[in-house]
Structures are given as structure tokens and as C-alpha cells.
Length: 247
Image (cartoon, rainbow, N blue to C red):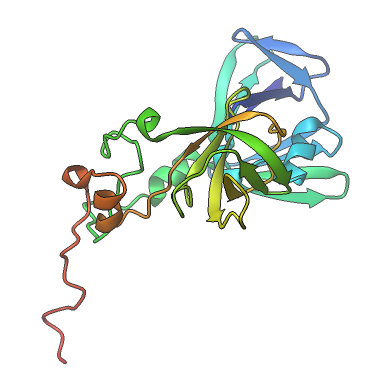
């Protein structure tokens, strides 16, 4: 009896097993690794030796926790394959020679969702989702990486001020996707400078990337930046003061 662990990142998937050798489960190859797994209904801890490439990528800041999905199946002694656990990584830690991935189960996520309809002044949709209805490709901008300084990239394409803040950068070849924290002033240099949530793992100078804009979910942004007011899902004219409370 052993576990097969699948960790899905943007652009790359790692498949590990606690078995004594590499195994194939449901047509997928799982590689034997120095990995330990502890699971419960609501959480899981995956401890992986620090020399592993996934551990090094995580330690260097190349993995944003919320972008790492986890699927665990168990192969019983009788050959039966059982889905044991699904969820996503919520935080990372380093313990001695191992990196620990702390994950929350899909069950916990479902139980935490509020029941009923919640309304607010801001839009509940995520940019480019089914509610937003905008076409991602229509707003994407291709660029070439000119320089990299840790989490800050200089691109050869000039973007409107703050256009990319809160957006996303995609490495064209690998598919790696990283959130853009801020679009900086270019300091007189041609092109645009952006700061990412984490250091790009696959991206190198000269590589092609795709930049998509950010959205603060405000009605003004929806109208002026995206011309998408008709699909705005919030209630911008909700009163901010309770009419039943005394002055």
C-alpha cells in the first residue's frame, strides 16, 4: 500500500510516490521521492526533501501557494486505486532538511463558503470568467523580457500607467503564470517595469511573455478600462449608511 501525490502548478506538474520505486497509476508516471504525507479530512502536510527540484523552486519563491493543487490517490495491496485527498497548498515552511507544503482540503473550502446571496458595491466576478464575459486574448499584450532583477522585470513593450498592476504574467513557452503586484515607473527607460508576486522560475532575458491587466472590481475601472459596465456584477449605489441607525 502506498500513496501517489500529484502537485499541479501553472505550467508544470510534479508526481511523487511513497512507494519503494517509480510507479504508474491510471496511466500517469509517479517518481519515487523522499516524501512524507500526513492527511486528515481538512488538511494535509507534504514533507519533501530539500534537494528535490520542487522544494528548491518553492524555497526560491517560485511557487505561489494558492496556485498549487494537490491530488492524492492510494494504491491498496489488492491493486485497487482509491482517491484519498484533494485540495490546494495554502502555505509553505522549512523544517530541517525538508520543505513542508501545508494544504487545505476541498471539503474545508466548500464548508467555508457562505450560504445565500451576498451583495456588495464591488464586482464579484473574476476578470475573464463566465460572469465577466471579457475575452482574455483581447486584452493580452505580448512582450520580450529585457532585464530581470529578482521579482522585477523590464519588458520591451510600453503599457499604460498602472495597466498591469494586479494582473498576470504568463511565460509563453512553459505556461508559468505569476501575479503582477505592481507596475512601476519606467525611470526613463523604454518599455515597462513590473514587480511580480514571486521570482519567475522559468523566465529568462529574451523570453516571450504575455501580460494581462489587473482589475480592482470597481465600477469606474470596469467602465473606463474595460468598457464592460453591462456585465458589472456589483451594486455600486448600495448605501454605505444604515438608514435605521440613529445619527
